[in-house]
Length: 133
Image (cartoon, rainbow, N blue to C red; front, side, top):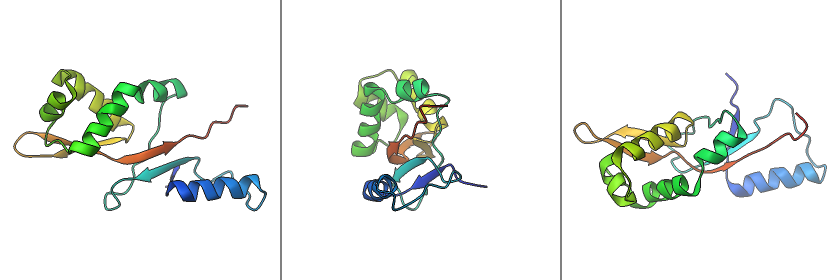
């Protein structure tokens, strides 16, 4: 199965892009067009895919990015704890986490008891958009 994303650092993405612009490198049409910088090297990276640019923009709203930062910085042990930290209703947070999980931005790992611990699965997402298709 061919990956539709490439894992790497921002510096690798920058070098790749500059090499293409300077003509030092040709882009193979079969190469991945989405770059992802992982936060967890052991877990690997899931493919991150949005149904549309609009869906991606909506899911990556300022409110949801703040939720991702809370997860990354505070490492809540459960969805309930995250809801308290975020000052949001637990059902609202759970729905958002399911949406973020569906596209590969968050993992819901088994926690203590019946709890699920949210974990940010990637640090950065870079988009490539073909404006002519």
